[in-house]
Image 1: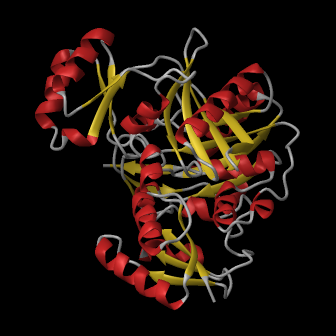
Image 2 (image 1 turned 90 degrees about the horizontal axis):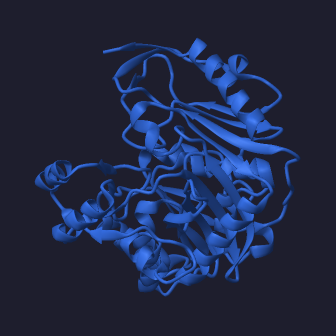
Image 3 (image 1 turned 90 degrees about the vertical axis):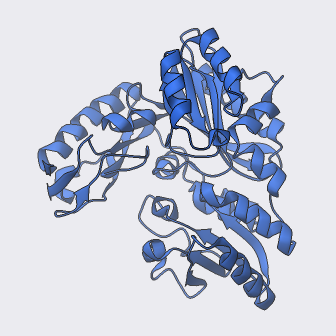
Length: 409
């Protein structure tokens, strides 16, 4: 019998519903999962239709050979990953084994921050001025023109490796330390609030668009200060419509026919929408739970069903929450610490808390965040409106830190 091949490396937050049930539990086909040893626990007791095999992702050639051998046995009718770092491998394997799905050329448009900007050049959506770090003169010219620039890895996620440059000497220091400048790009700093638009795409059209604001000072980059991540859905209004139009422009220009996209855009003080970056996968860090609570569809499970050609099942169960839903995630501070006490279920209980997951235990060593989704815990919150969400975040923050006790080094 043929199966779907699923490549899993980390990403445990992507594999469950907001209720805690596995997204694999009720799939109507067999799945063979290649997963790292640490993440295999997320596939325990999900059903006999899911076959789990431990993989060593440090040896990609061995993975290629194993996948080719497995394909001879089944063969695979589809191949999918939700891990950003495995997207190129998944595309390569589809092409090598003649499996339907997104190929290498299109994958590059959703991975390479330079390529995605090139594709969007000339569109109705403003794209930041940028330069490749293989051309230092162009980067220095960019810094001279805009004063503040941002240097980003071309194909990384979660704000890891991002550097803010304010002066020429900071730029010189960056180049002096850079081991592989070709892995980075620079772009003008865009002042404004950051939004994310998450689209479920069928036949080139967004069927569901979930738009949310990262609250100022509580977005992806603030992990370096230990600030919580807070994001809340937009459910109506002109801004939501404009953000969805921007998302549709990106989907059309980058040519995605089927799947899930996670787009980030800035809204400037002049109310201009400016492209930041986009991925062809569900948003990480628990965003799928927030979207599921708001719209009734888990985007990770939907991605699997779309890859299997089961579009109707992917969007089944749609419903709209009567208020707004948001997410609050707690992140470590700037010092290494030993956890002494964590909140229990009764400490984070209220009828407006849809989910409360704590990821640390007493005795754990907690390191400073190196990634925007290095969480201590995450909560999904229902609220009347954005103001009510902020009020509830403040209350939940108080509850959390009343019961989270650490000893710093």
